[in-house]
Image (tube, rainbow, N blue to C red):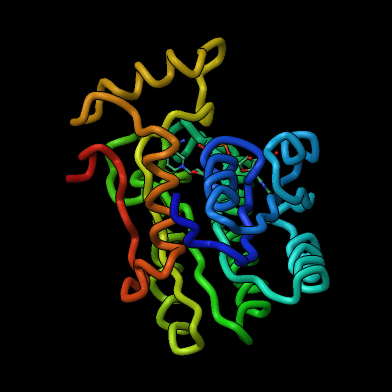
Length: 243
Ligand SMILES: NC(=O)c1ccc[n+]([C@@H]2O[C@H](COP(=O)([O-])OP(=O)(O)OC[C@H]3O[C@@H](n4cnc5c(N)ncnc54)[C@H](OP(=O)(O)O)[C@@H]3O)[C@@H](O)[C@H]2O)c1
């Protein structure tokens, strides 16, 4: 096992479950000290790593999170802005404004706030940031998911632009856009994770959903020096769905 992150301090938002938890564990397995942030302390404690409760849609929380990391470690080398919520599932004119606001607040404002405060802490020593967008942001084949798709497309756009603003400061920013992955996000009522995987697999050229490790390995590559010349890229990992 290589240790690409030995001695590094890493933050994973939404680290209490799914892609975030798997990423946090993989970073730790490669030597990083990992802070996992989310709203649910019990889930964070179970995930391993150093749990810090924060709602990414609330600037006070995000500022306090990065202040606490700064005080404890004096630096931040890697940030994976993965916290996100799924929702909508209805045509635009039927979507209540609070649902729109909830999606934008976490999926887009949450990434803006995280990067804003991470960059402040990374500036003296440099670092890498990986934002978790979605392949849904790149196409219109999921009617009813326009709001979710718009937040994720915005994350990709924000990634490209912010990457160019900070690359000369030694802060390298990229994104991943997973397709359906093997998590419990977007379960239908009464559906199991296996049912969900089978339902989503039908529409995918590869014929199955992505494993957590298939998403995480791309995140770790973008966060590591192996991808040092990759800047402002949005890496699609979706079994061919947007090919
Ligand atoms: N699974 C997929 O098929 C798929 C595909 C493409 C993209 N993605 C993206 O991948 C990311 C991870 O999703 P996942 O599939 O692993 O689902 P998940 O298990 O539901 O993970 C989402 C995480 O975000 C946290 N979170 C939500 N709102 C938050 C907030 N306001 N502040 C802090 N943390 C918050 C949740 O924890 P708490 O609720 O406890 O705070 C949870 O741990 C998301 O950005 C999602 O949009 C997923």
